[in-house]
Image 1 (spheres, rainbow, N blue to C red):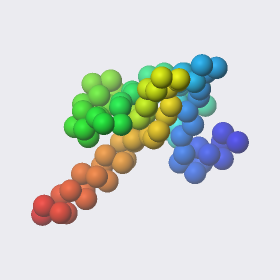
Image 2: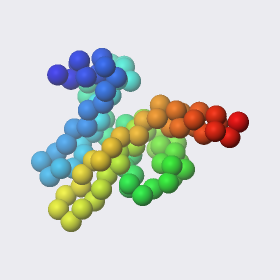
Image 3: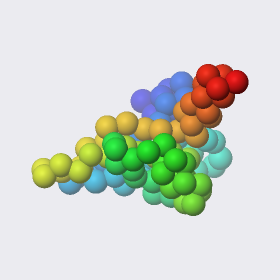
Length: 98
């Protein structure tokens, strides 16, 4: 299940028993590609601006930002923003302004 997902370019978020994020497994290769990495991600809120997301990724060196809604019950991953997503948004913005 993991290898086919990675082959399709998908990422897997590894959750703990309390719905806490333990790590992210991604298609970025290397010898430890199948080991969940806590350093591979940062967490952001749904209402964070894209510039804040970019800064968080840059400062941490993470590959993805997990959009997490902290509810009264337990945190919930609502989405994943990748470096590739940010590049696509920047290209689209440049085309609109260019």
